[in-house]
Length: 423
Image (cartoon, rainbow, N blue to C red; front, side):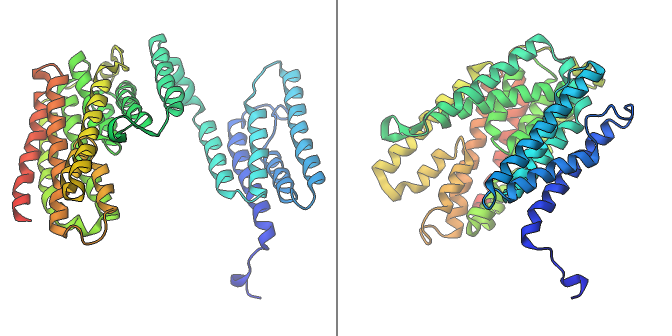
């Protein structure tokens, strides 16, 4: 048998994976404790590898030898706890990190042993990531103020407590609303607002706001627009940078729409690109033009952002009310006119969420719309969504502060018109 044709026994693969995952954790822990006094470490590279290997054996024998599996797993956990007790007795310091990492390593080895390789690998990667960012996490926590801790707690409340318990069943006229989807709008807007604040504080005003706008627009450029317009109204940060972030979010929206169309409704991509690319290029040029007016600031002064209220629910609730109204209008049109009103429904539902129009288009039966018509139908939500964002940028910002961003969005909107005439 040649070396190239050799493959390990299938039964051994989970155990080998468990050992590899344990060694990976052990390498990080060994490096972190490289300067410790010999013999004072809780565990080293070999120990973590063996802990995961014990978990792998326990998982592999779960069905065939359940008693042996339980003994190995319990013994491994007991040895970890005894090692933690011994280390605290020797140096008098109490730190649960090493023992918790060892227990998690044992669990990851067990998951690998029972065949849950994906979960085991992802969990191990997250463990190593958290351990490797120890210094940065400690520095970040030390830099937080009491107001920022309260803001984090509020966001955790609306995102992790309220959102999961809300029902996802239709309610209201025509079953047009879903409580969880509506509250998700509130979570997105407030989340992007707070993420923008933290990014500006850490990376500086320009890079932080623009990075948050670009990343947030992958999910919802409308929510990003509302969040940045709220910053403009409150006078937070450089107005030019916030306006540039609003237009940059629209640039990302054009890219996202074309990518989703290529995946979900490829027959409409060519005519849609004919319409969308000019809008993308003009919006990008407008972003650069607006950012040229940004005030030069040092990173130190850029990071000194005053935390006002990143969870001001006013703009978020306004957008939620608008989503409710548009969803109701779309359901009414569909109920009254049926399939004949499909273009109107797509335009209305896409005003706030262009992705929903693309998803709906991809689910339509073949042949209902020709490629050119489909491209034009998808172009309408883009225009309406851009017009909506321009209106939100101008109104929520409270006046002239948001006009540069609104003008950049309108410039991109006008650039789309010639493309629609060519399709």
